Length: 293
Image (cartoon, rainbow, N blue to C red; front, side, top):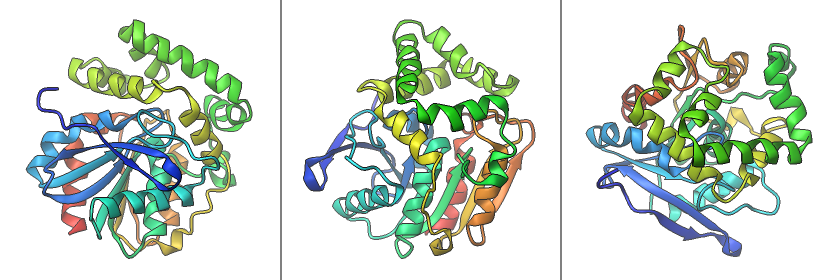
């Protein structure tokens, strides 16, 4: 991408590295936006123009174990909130909005709960919900039960599967696109057929998995256990978006997440799948821009 922002690095306590980019208007209102599973800071190239128009500085870190960011010895969602506080301190942002896409949503919610005096708005897009909760687990498909009940118990299998996906990303983008939408509906398949969207999404996946699969394994362990998030502590205006045809995350989990956060609203998008925001990032960013300042 011509004129893409430069990669940036900060060192956290203990020497761990955290990589990120700032998309959009670097002088605009700060929005910390967290990518999904797998993914990287590169995903938000699709939102760059809209963030510029809305005067948002879209701060996109690589989450733990992805891209340029290291992995702590004992990852927890609360500890991730501490790392994001340190990042935003380093960037001198006392107040900021937070967003999370898919697997980034639990981390975003943890930041909002852990820093209630600093987070001004929370947007959760196609979010991973609390799958350990009985109300969510009961509605899982057979495939989702495999992903969120069995896989977390077998890190070796997780590594094997995602190493295979990484190989496809490197050698055959067409195959990788087919794998990424294997169980998806028509709208997700149409989005991934768009060359610009495919280039961005697949490039984000490839960069995220470049150092290995530790980020995916940590995500699955955290998603499928007790999140330990005090949802009642979240004070920021919150909105959840979920496509009714999303097959990647449980729709019931997104609804449960919206009910758990005080005052949250949920927007259900009829017939949309998991990747809908790749074609319509301005819808989410406009709500955040209007709610955050």
